[in-house]
Amino acid sequence: MKLEDEISSFPNSELLNWYKSVKRDLPWRETKNPYKIWMSEIILQQTRVNQGLPYYERFIAAFPKVEDLSNAKEDEVLKLWEGLGYYSRARNLHFTAKLVANEFGGIFPNTYKGLLELKGVGPYTAAAIGSISFGLPVAAVDGNVYRVLSRYFGIMGSIDETATKKKITELANKILAKKDAGNHNQAMMELGATVCSPISPNCEECPLNVSCNAFEQNLQTQLPVRSKKTKVRDRFFYYSVLLSNNEVLVSRRGSGDIWQGLYEFPLLETASRLKDSEIIEQLSLKTNDVIMNVSQEFKHILSHQRIFAKFVLLKSGSFEGSNFMKVKVEKLKEFAFPRLINRYLEKQRLGIVEEV
Image (cartoon, rainbow, N blue to C red; front, side, top):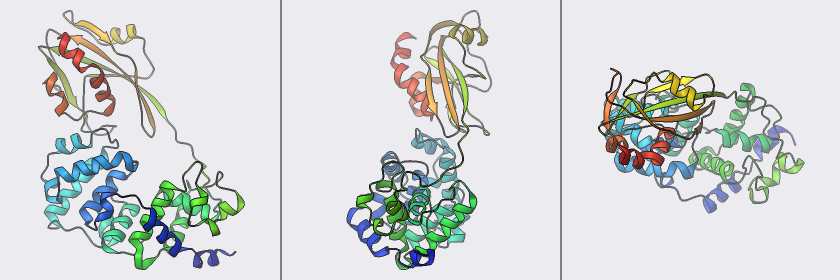
């Protein structure tokens, strides 16, 4: 069948009927409020639904309106976001809330172009918000949709290549049910998330299987094609947890690296893994510092980095460092830390309190 015929015969009715009968019960599907749709889309960027759902509920409870979010302190926003990762999303969320509340009178743009101008909103997110909230006839194309349409149309080009992504986006807009764009986009995303999965897709349950090229030719495991491998670098972090009078030193991470705006303990980063004795040698301890213990190694995987970290618990007679602030141990839970540090605190906090 020619591509033009495949486009014209795309089973939109079957797709929409399938979606309406099996869609997951999610709170952002009960509204067209652009603030709530925007919130859900930002949270779900690079995040699975089951992980993002409690964050969405937490944010909406804390900030029911965009004005509430705009008036929040950045530390409040980062604390609520804690553990979700990709913290630039949280900072962009806060920035955009201020813009919408203060410059747009609390009203979100209702055009695709206007939505694209919001910080943290790209073509996919703008299309999702625009189609769901305002009925804009624009296809929302994310990783799920790239995969579904690569298989459906039998596209052999790599989805890592710009030309292939452009082709799929054009196809997505051509098959879009323009009179019901919001549901169509959500149906495509739901299909990719629950049926047309990366591994072992459930083709028998797919509403597109009658005319899907990959299903007909048994190419599901070969599509979509990927040509690029993500380069991952290893980093080694050694934190000093300096204790004195039930207080510890913390500082806020600056810009230009991971975890911007989050808090951490004094950090030593090295190019390679150190033995415990080597860690201690490089810490430049004072004579009245007492080493209480060196933690196990904690591993934290990011999209392009693997972090390996250890924590050296020290009892210190005095604190130094203009870039650090003293925090009571029991107050640490009020600060936004990277998940890596929270894992250490969850494991060691009671021990710290008891030993000081």
